[in-house]
Length: 190
View 1 (cartoon, rainbow, N blue to C red):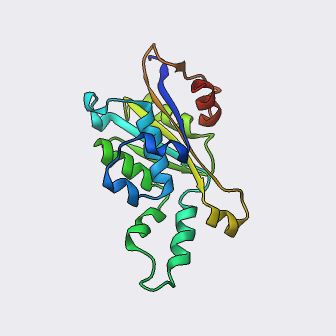
View 2 (cartoon, rainbow, N blue to C red):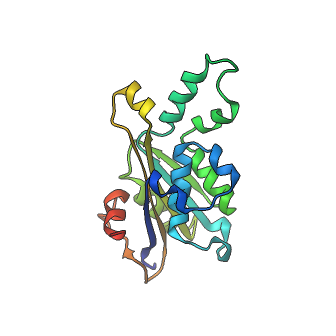
């Protein structure tokens, strides 16, 4: 079997969001989806030239949709209540749907909660089982100021992504000890 290689990597923060052209729909997305989409855009992959039903999406997050959940909960008693359009973003896996919609991807998907250390392993297994020929791996974590105040964690917002596929050439051949996408992206994006 061919090696699994990372052919693109990215890291984005909220400061990077204005670099990308997403259209009017982007403004209604929550921060997790905005950062996740930006991380995928920063990969620079031409999805039109690939079999879209064979591109998987694996996402991992520490805090899921917590910031959106807190915002939704706080707005529930305001006049008119919380926005129904905000409600859909109270699902931690919503970033997968937004990536799939934007790029027309219909391959397998997986959302992991509780950290980034199993993301690459799961994506690699997806490729080794021939469920997909390539996989977008995204780690996205957001704790808004409002959520940070509520749960007593520091505010944070960042996303990183890699494009994993079979091959012999790329930025990095995936090794058995490559489990955590965060340090790997930091190494590949410097």
